[in-house]
Image 1 (tube, one colour):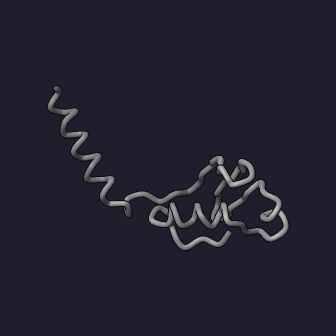
Image 2: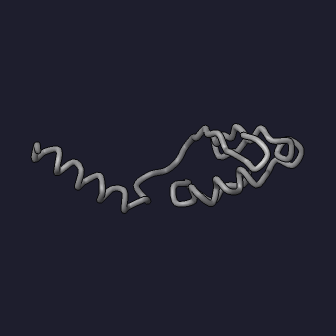
Length: 80
């Protein structure tokens, strides 16, 4: 195996262990809810979800779950 590739793989593992190196700025995903799929996004510090609850309340279980999953990558605690 190429020794430079081996070194890159080792460096990638080191980086992955140091989550503070990454700040999530935007994200788009499909969230598979219990009843249906929902399109969620994060941009400029704001979350959005296509579910009915988010439309009326500006927060929902889908965006809250994503905040928990991605909390180590977020620049600062984010409100939905």
